[in-house]
Length: 175
Length: 226
Image 1 (cartoon, rainbow over the protein chains, first blue to last red):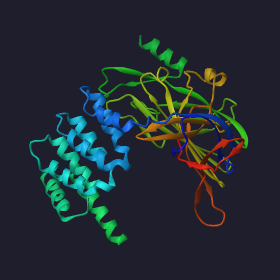
Image 2: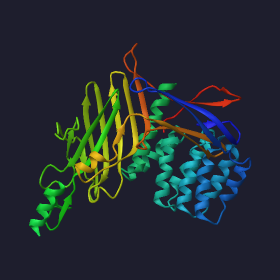
Image 3: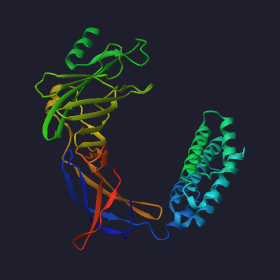
């Protein structure tokens, strides 16, 4: 779980009650915390443009966790999509999907990727998955997923449509 | 040569079956796997066990024989409920269930059929009783080619002692702390639930962690298992 403590060594007490079968267990341990550097966001954004594909990939994944900086991170993820690297593109979409406050922009982006027949099938398929799991509940999304699922029965697009329909139903119940 | 294989099979308790597609062009010695279990809930018990392939033509372990009181006479023979040999691989995945009074033990073993003593045999174990249950994952089981070696060797111990492991990592801008309860086999507590006496159902037994500052404990944080 995330903790607010600054970098340093701490004494912590851990407990669990297994007395229903064994006993209560308690231990004091030493924990060393190292916080990310204050400029971690800048470093990761710079790494997105690295010549090394693994560095770009790791940065793309890590950038999925800066929810307080969505307005800054999301455009950088979209911009990096131009790099012709399908592993990177998949990780970028995965991270984009982690920003609930960018849902309209996500949805628009994923719909464009799904419709772009010049992109590899794997990338379009993954964009369908992201739409199904995270996209806005809207007639455009539903129509796009229905068309994609009809085009390739039993694939990830079918799963994406089912996932969307489940979310649509759940959001109607919640209303 | 055939006579020698039969003698070796008798000596080492191994069973010879056709390999792979069963077309009979090749024989594989499916070696019996011996192990020792220590159960430690209330009264401690030592159980000697063996995995076998029960039928001729079988290419995986589908029978377990347990000596529940360690006197050398097997009391319990189990046809294994889940015995899978993933097609095209040499893995086995078996589940042993045995009861001791009101306690329901379960031990899942996963290993390699071709050379079960070269590669680790991994295990999951769980215990259920009137008070509730626990489930531990990803430990290792010491295994042996003979009953004598299992008897004198290290046991897989289902129960205490337990210890906590804590570690810190980073994710995005955050520092994370992960805490897990481990047993001596290296397994990690995955779930634990208590029977709720007041109502039907169970409540989760949660791991908590509290920072100590100036000799005083802070408010406990509930951790996720593992």
